[in-house]
Length: 220
Image (cartoon, rainbow, N blue to C red; front, side, top):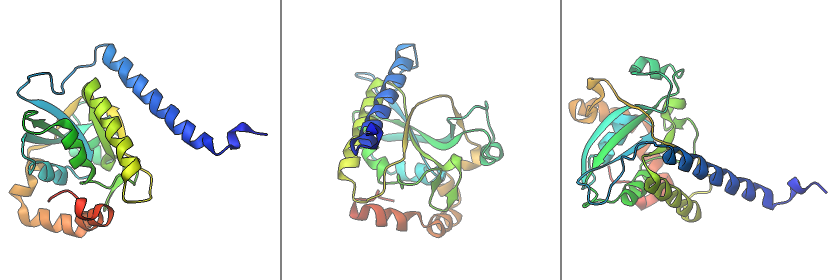
């Protein structure tokens, strides 16, 4: 009998993949990857999330008590200092992301993770709502071992308790170079509130979030 046909194989494969991910990122940190999370007693810490359109991610996290600043930008790709047009071509490998500086005395990284999940659709690959393509993938970019463990624990807990049937495809990856987006993208929801609200509504973001999370959807 082919052992690969056993029902336990898909679960075993997922567990193996998770273990390899943890091992790979752990080796990267051990080899000197920068630690930019919350050091003991630090006044500020950094978190990086990709959740589709960075205008929306920025607007969502600016509402969180303890978040000091948010910066829209690009990460996870191969080109240095990419432009919006280059990233939008889907050839550079970057994701639209937001770099968050927060006060760990007011909000924990675990709370940011919990909030992040409820502001995205984690069930679709290379897409968020009406935006399609790899720049709109969802991802948690971790800055140190503590963030890696917290992200993996958070994802595992969500997979057990999720209110929807679809699998979670959001990736967890080592944070690399982050390039701030052009100035007109920063605080777009404040600079262009009418256009931003029209985009967010017509894209169906909040309707889908309510469908996925119900009353647990992030506050917008």
